[in-house]
Amino acid sequence: MRHYYDAVIVGSGLAGLSCAISLRKAGLRIVVMTKESEINETNTLYAQGGIIASRDDDSAELLRSDLLRAGSGYNNLEAVDFFVKNGPPLVFDFLVNEVGIQFSKSEEGKIDYTEEAAHSKRRIVHYEDHTGDKIEDSLISYAKKQGVEFLTDYTAIDLITNNHHSRDPQEVYREREVFGVYALNNTRNETETFFAERVILATGGTGSLYYHSTNPVSSTGDGTSMAYRAGADIINAEFVQFHPTSLFHKDIKRFLISESLRGEGGRLKDHEGQEFMREYSEMGDLAPRDVVSRAVYDRICKTGKEYMLLDIANYYKGTKPLEKRFSKIYATCLKGGIDITKESIPITPAAHYFCGGIKADIFGRTSLKNLYAIGEVSCTGLHGANRLASASLLEGLLWGKSSSGDIVKNRRTIKKQRFDNIPDWEKPPAAEVFDPLLIDQDMQAIRLTMWNYAGIIRTVKGLRRAESDLEYYSHRILRFYKSAEITKQIIELRNSVVSSQLIVAAALKNRKSVGCHFIRE
Image 1: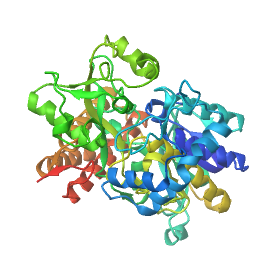
Image 2: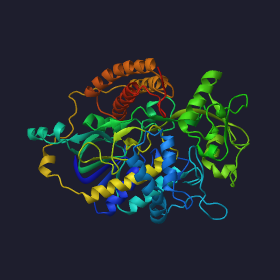
Image 3: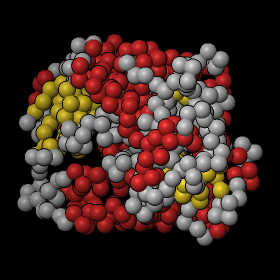
Image 4: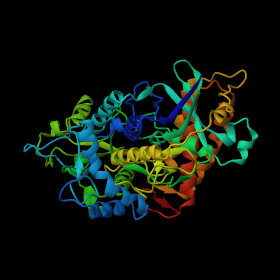
């Protein structure tokens, strides 16, 4: 089956939805594709803390300073300046005034700005600790009203490029262009061809490459891997941010304990009840995430414990009741037998955010013609070597809007004859069906390799071990991929090993510890 669109957006988080809404309102025929059964199953859904927004006593210069300090000065100054000028006002102009989202307010009826680590101002708006799902679900509802078309259970396989896929030999001599996406219809197990004059990757991050992660299982580096295979530039892949406080629980996995708890007074403690963050940073519990993650990890290693503790019960300084201000965390922990109003929360660091990705400019344009990358899958250089807390949602919003503006302004038509020269996806003859347990075993092996050797604290020896192990996995995975009956799980496995290799290669190349890339010789 062949489809034709003005634009195909892969990914249905904040970045993809913001882009889709703007393109649809401009009259373009678009589709938003997600490999999940539910449109809202994205990284955005799980964001708790909040989103940076404008306020009267803040300034672009102050936010710029905080971004550069958190990013260790590794940031792209053009992206930072674009972000601090254009990002914060969008929260009210678009999310509040257009979409109709009402963020949490104080008892006086004013916006309840909260604080997170490495910010010099309380500039983060939130919806209790449900910020992500509030934004996600509101945007989906608004997008449907604008007539945005959604396809669930469609897994993108590969980007279509003229050089690689066309039957016309003349395309080999032309500039590489992206013509669309091959995708798997998960429910029918059939491949379909989606042609488009623009493809926007908004596929999220790579957290699921690691054994401990706050990301949903689906965060397997799909967009990064697809773009790399198509020839796009990937940069800053060594910068994987680990969140210092994910819930450590035998039954509840991948649950984030928001940094806002520390912004509202929470303290990190060891099993003897001793606070320890002042030993690692003069900023204490509000040090940047990379510093706190290494501190918690170091304390775990030194004490031989599996986790540390976060005490909010004895230090909460918010005005609303703790169980109301952090209702999602309260309810989730309570299900696991932990009452955060009375006892400390067991926590461990976990892979959280990919600061690297597909190289993109301030309009989301990549090194490949017709291909855009926005949100976590992209790397504009905004975050430098370490992301400032609550900058990611605003990044997705801003680049969703800026990329759509560029696409509308520079509309172009690809001749249908060029599309007609592209064949549909070809299945291998006598395709083999592989045991899902074998695929799961390989995925677990990749996650353990990345956690042990390319994680919070790295060594050259460990990274070389990871490089060797991943090369072995890659050889086997790519070999059976070519002969397999294609499934969502096999696509994710291929993407996982490719993205893992990109991270390890970048980490080995950069021998200097900076930001969330900490390496020992």
